[in-house]
Image (tube, rainbow, N blue to C red; front, side, top):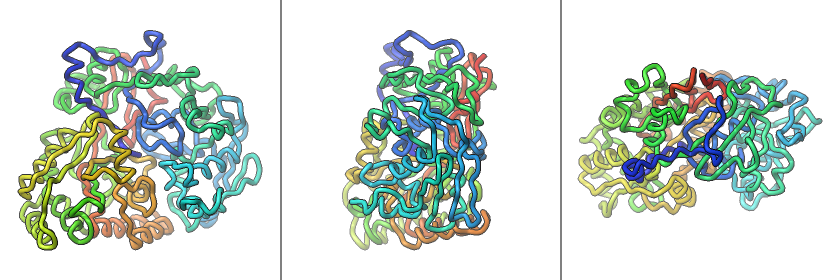
Length: 536
């Protein structure tokens, strides 16, 4: 899932004027027992197959229940699944629990899942999470433009509580990913007007919208517990208010003042003080998140062999250790691969990952090799969203590149996350760009498939390599997790060979909660375990 973070450039002016956005509802506050939590405006309407950034994702995952759910440590548990049967990890019979319903009273059936998955896969629906269905037979006929079919041949409804799934190949990951948002069911009303549905979504999860119009854009989203939810993660609070701020600084100040209950990222300017500020209410936890620099091959000087050499030189020109220490004070660390260090099977010794080490001498040598193909001209710019916590590290990265390679390099702010995402997705960005990934389910294959598989809607750099794609299939088809991890190492070695993009940082989650909260913790992916936040 795309990482969306905020530190508005306007924050200083707001604070100087004494204007801190509190994001309270128009009613002037929230009921006692409701948890107020940091947020910002989601990028898109709240449709599970189209939500691929965490400000929308944190809400979607509260509103829906899937076949499985993930606990705070990333372990998968059955939620709506009663049985998931397979003898070969390729052909599945899924039985859902009876007596579940959406919050409009409609029964959740096998058809609710199958229709939602087909909608998500169909190219003409333009869903950001389409790649999640790429393992299913018939996906290729739906993902082409124009599509050759309207439904995946690998999905069949047997009865109200049973459906079958046939995959292209055996998959070691398929059952694990069934708690991931694109695999949620949808009620029939959603298909009448999906955009309108996303403004007032109807789910089957532990929470529901507090009322029609509970999403006050740029202000808040109000949720209350769903009394008809009977899965494994019932709400232990009286509701959630996602309060939208223009900056993490503003949110953190509200937390200290007791006007906000939880925040899932400490702003850079408080990283040296937040443990003293919050005491045992401060949280630091390694999480499955990573930060990259992407460069599309259409950018001048970055195609072919010249581009490969320049990406490797730039990578070796970045002093990741210094950036981690001076800006993030140890709460982020140098990237080691294309995934995240906390994921099962992580290997710190992937062949080729020496290009992630700061090596000025080799960087200059490789840059000169690229110049021999075509002399460098112009300016190297790294775009970042100005409403995110990225300015400091992007500028430090650009300075490291500038000082090492002797070229004009700088960070270039775009006003909003949505603007940079739209330009990256449409391939009109025209410069390098920062982007991040936050785990949707605890698997290295999720990071690799979503970002680098040919045809994925979230493959920002447009990387495509048949050898890499084939290794992903082999990793999915492996007999044991250990066998899969070995093939994943081979796949990542191909990414390093091609320098698909430039991994920069690996995360440790930082967060905190106010004196009004009894207990709260961050999960494996860096978001709060919202259902289990308990107020005093």
